[in-house]
Amino acid sequence: MGIQDQFKDKAQELADRAKGLGQEGSDKASEASESAQDQFGQASERGQQAAEQGRDKAQEAGQNMQDKFDQDYDS
Image (cartoon, rainbow, N blue to C red; front, side, top):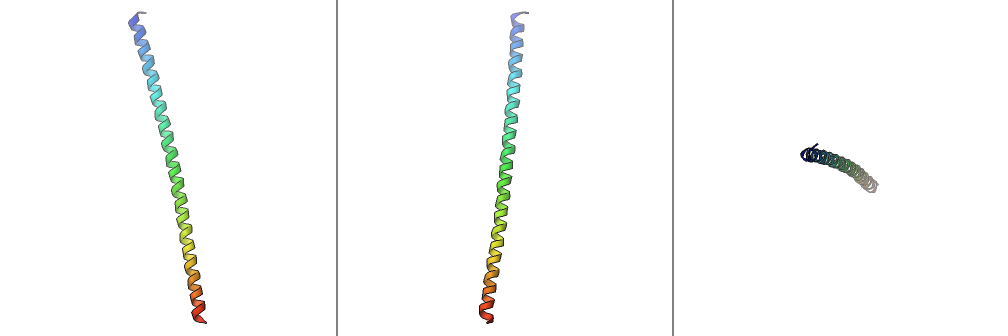
């Protein structure tokens, strides 16, 4: 086996390793993206729940004020 063949084999080995590292990097980026999407989804869901709870509390407070008004002026 000549020197050219050795260089060719070494170059192929390095190219394969770089390709593998590139794929590994791509996989890690995909995982990070999925994790960020999950966290955003959870935050969005918590925000939605907080908004619903706030709406419910506001409706309850409004109803309490209406009831109090009715009691005060119906007497």
